[in-house]
Length: 185
Image (tube, rainbow, N blue to C red):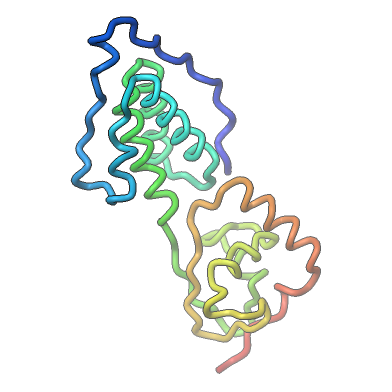
């Protein structure tokens, strides 16, 4: 279930003195991928705030968060509200990396279709989300009806609200495409 839209947080005041303007919010980049290293060192408090706000928005757009992930999201939001944008950025960037990469695995049983798989509580609990499962497994399943017993599917754990919306639209538009049962192989 997606998180509700949270109110925008007030932006911290822009530094007034030259000394405040030259302070750089430093972060430990040892654990971050090289591509994100430059983004981990905002040049100003306002840049740090903007980066943290962007990470907050990305995290709020994900579905299926665990209690611990919701808590981490709240901590990032609290840090941002308190003016600690650099810490908020790091918390939220870490959370987003986790949400984007977290997957589950599902083994297809004889007679199951993508419709059945998506409807399983361990997957999405909503059969209309079968296009999400298919999209994540197009390397193994060229067509939605090409399932077979024993096939191990990868299921994205935290699709975005937009991905869920698109999957619902695709499911309704394609009719029974995802409902054909798996065959024994």
